[in-house]
Image (cartoon, rainbow, N blue to C red; front, side):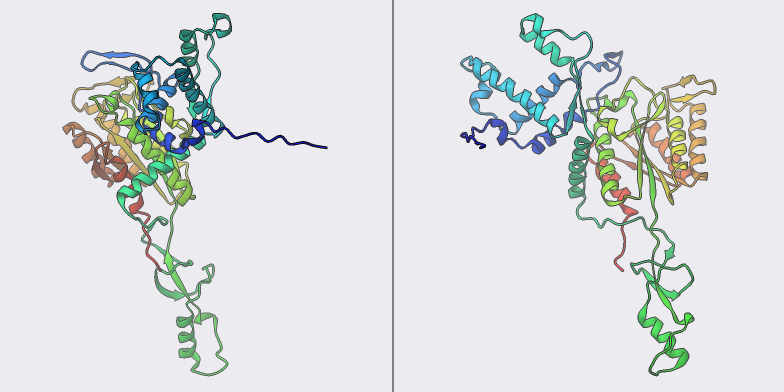
Length: 427
């Protein structure tokens, strides 16, 4: 005989927390632009890249800040954290346990994955469990966003951007062509073999009566059939071209994190509303490379120049491999082209003004995109006269569009531009 033992439920502070709301507050930390390659010193801009944002210790500090900002810690807890309390070691231990439990819960829910300690991390068993050793061990354990975590942040970013834009009708891409379909968007026409049999009944009956006269039964002939015309819906392949040059996190402003949020929002929008479309992400600094969306959260800028030509070349190759009706490049940058790849693979750089050789190679790639039927829409995050001059010329050659946007308006501008081609009329 089986027995069941019932115990009184003792809730914990963790049960009262909203993980999704907490994760949303962590979005700035999780999508931080950061600086790749470790500490880097520039004679004008100083030190950068000194913070490690991928360790669990850094995540704990971000969680603690989020709890404080959301008002979910009691005044006694805040006093202990500020060092103004009574030195309650049990309370401090409970706070540390809470942060550990939060990370464990985020991992169990599938929002993050926590990696094993790196080689050479301290052995706590043999160190007597000292606090400094525990901190060093936490620093040696990395975490990363999972697909579920990225999708959640993309949904929240899309929701915020769409609420800022107001209501928008979301449909498929409009084109100037007409075809037979389910939704009526134009006058009906005679049926042709292969058309969707979406009959315009009144027009069909009128043609039959005009041909044979009124009478019962009414005989229909093949030539009497009239079908509705609908707007032809095209699929679109998009490459988001992200600048990862040093200037994207300089001057006291992180310009790269908003660009990553736009990528997540676009990815969520395409996956949920336009499954026929594709989105690929390419970063360009000294060199250009494609990165999977799963690695977007860890993408960082570096001590790089701006190799726009190679970025456009790689984006064009990716788009040409996509069998879509429409192909486009969405380029987000804050600097003029300052690098190019030489035939032998070496990188030539020149940060002073607009180098004629670099410009020629960049314009050559823009023209290649035009010949391939690829549009280029550029979003500028700076008002550098050299950048404005270059972008205006790119828009002129590629017959695309150029926008000036700040980090606050970038998402709205990109989403409005992307959705402008997706408005559809009600039939």
